[in-house]
Length: 425
Ligand code: GDP
Ligand code: IMO
Ligand code: MG
Image (cartoon, rainbow, N blue to C red):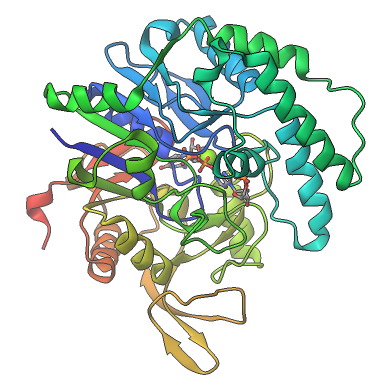
């Protein structure tokens, strides 16, 4: 068998959690491959609302095994909080979740370093989630990190070495730390992690595929936040594109099957950095209000704008997307006209390929599409979709070159419409 991947094509928060949950019954294993508690993946079903941060979104279905892969960075404090909340709501988490021994640990000092580096940047700060993501991946790459598999071997000594180094760095940044408030809770979190099945996830996933099991890899963030291809330096510190699933789970490229690319019918971004189609007017506010565009974890206001097809074509190419999933279509229900940016105008020239830098003056060139002006939220079948909405889908498929096989029309699991691929022109 080959593993399928679901990942975000924009700047994160596309609705990955919802769709992974919807697709999970078709899989045996759901595995996260990168990122950490910077993610906030929302799931809604049976009138309940859950936000997952480090735990894969397949966790609510009983029969599947969920894996936190080696590419993930794990904060023991936040993980314990998240896992215990799931235990309280009836999830037998220690049975259904396995953690890679090669996943790196986020230390309390990593969070402080994240904040110190942001302060040093001043007005050029990235607007990180403050969860220590950058400093933890930095330690991984500089070969200073501590991994989950270290917790049973000489762990306190390894921790002490890392802490000492971090305190020196913090001092150099002008942040004197005398006592680490979170340290006790962090060690409690480590004890909690010890109760889980800590595995060599590369063997687990590859053996499962060899045994005919179906694996879904769940991305975090979005391709425009990728460390190599995103709007650098306003990005996260991992490879969010599908290559990240190869390194973050130990999967060979030949083992990749479908790549589901997920995007909103418009576009959002949280944190700093360029955003060519951002709207600063009433339309932007309207999208924010109707779409409840506030961070799932931080509550930060998300910046809103029209869909950016230049950026989408780029991320579809980078990921080799085989199927597209369009989210939050219902948010545009009331719009008479919907705009889609098909090209950028830069220095008087029309640019259709995503440029090296978007941190410059860019005038989006918009194509206008007629809105459907009716509520989609209660529809249950493809045949009920209004003509103007189908036209919008066809327009996007034409410009993006990949079929849209799923459309989401509300936050609930049930508000999902599967399209018949064979009907696509
Ligand atoms: P993720 O990080 O990609 O999993 O996405 P988030 O959970 O951060 O953000 C998506 C938000 O949109 C959540 O609040 C979801 O409940 C909500 N959502 C998902 N799909 C839809 C949809 O089709 N329509 C509406 N109105 N909301 C949706
Ligand atoms: P999900 O998985 C949206 C953004 C932050 C910031 C930048 C770097 O829910 O889609 P970091 O803390 O990673 O160093 O922050 O990346 N960011 C996200 N934006 N959704 C996310 O995750 C994000 N994770 C990080 O706002 O701009
Ligand atoms: Mg999110």
